[in-house]
Length: 361
Image (cartoon, rainbow, N blue to C red; front, side):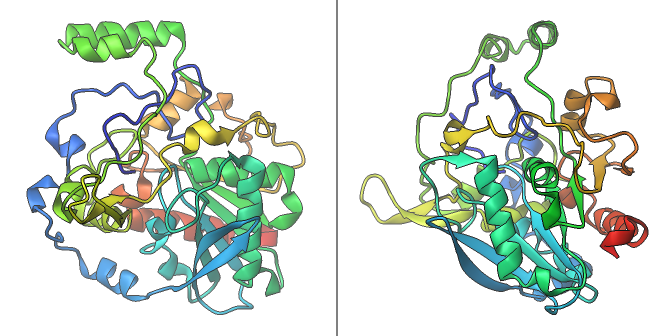
């Protein structure tokens, strides 16, 4: 996720996955600015990654209730369908080095939800609206022309969206796979107290002060004079050291667009996501509904994910995902599994799709 100074979330809001309480911590450079050492250059990448991104998707825009939604597709229409949904402030290209691994056996699609990527922004957002966008894109990609209904796959915030569809509209899919999707609320008073005490012990007094409840985002995305400056500001939320910097760079470059400089000096670079999305998102229709009557559910998560630790709060049964659903832990991975362990994620998805559920084959 791109990160501008001043991006904040109210501490009293429910957090649906990777939208953490923003503490503005004093982060080490490898977390705060992981791409700075490259000074705008593209990092070296392994051959598997070059081969994957060389399989360019077909790109289109799908009109959905007054907004154009970005859609990427791979593979042949008529094969079983997969549709990938990205996380908060992300975009469809977070899947561009994952999706090609499934294109021989599946018709694969990835979309950018409204307010993110190359999709249009809206005045208001909702879970039901996002569900409609996913469904419309799945239809536009031809995923319902296969003998079986598609499998919905979502990372983080995108996992919350496919979970909503699996519970509210199970007839639209054969199964749903969530990738490191948490359902926890904000820190409890006790947790905040411990976080403040830890910050004080470490001398991070400004962090401790901000833990009282940071303000809502009020400023638009910053415009940077050069691409290098913008890339330097890219980091992940929640904060982590990127497992593979060449993937972080790939994602960051595709998170930016040209924009006029505020002083009229020409064009610069700014982030593509709507900075006010969280303030405009109505989550009343989500309500962490249970999984009764849902499509078959599975969960793949990072074994070092702070999102999952916060969501579970020490108890895995705190999640609305049933304990009976397949749960697969990816070793040595934090929240952004496709960045930390992309090939392990591919292998886990392949294994889950091959063995479960019978209707998804």
